[in-house]
Amino acid sequence: VLNDAIAIVLFKTFHKYYNPEGPNLSEADIPAALLSFIVVSLLSILVGVALGLLASFMYKHTSLVEHPKLETSLLFSFCYLCYSTAEALELSG
Image (tube, rainbow, N blue to C red):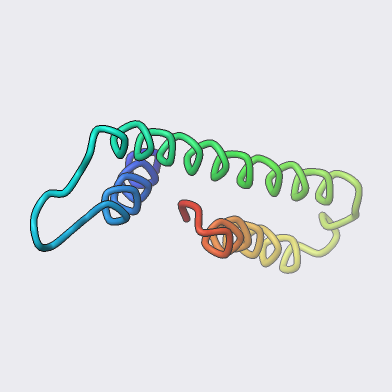
């Protein structure tokens, strides 16, 4: 999964600087692209960790064990919530 996330972030970073008419990359664009890659990666991890902590807090402090179908549904919903939140913030999904 980590390789996929890195590939998505790299693609989005390179796509931002892509020019179909030919390379027009200055020296100032390389550090900006690297910084963009690092910021998007770190913020994506932060979103995942924050929503993971929220999910674990909810699972710990509720009685979802008594409702296994709801528990399973919420598990998949939180997985999709991480992806959709990151995409809404234009981060890696």
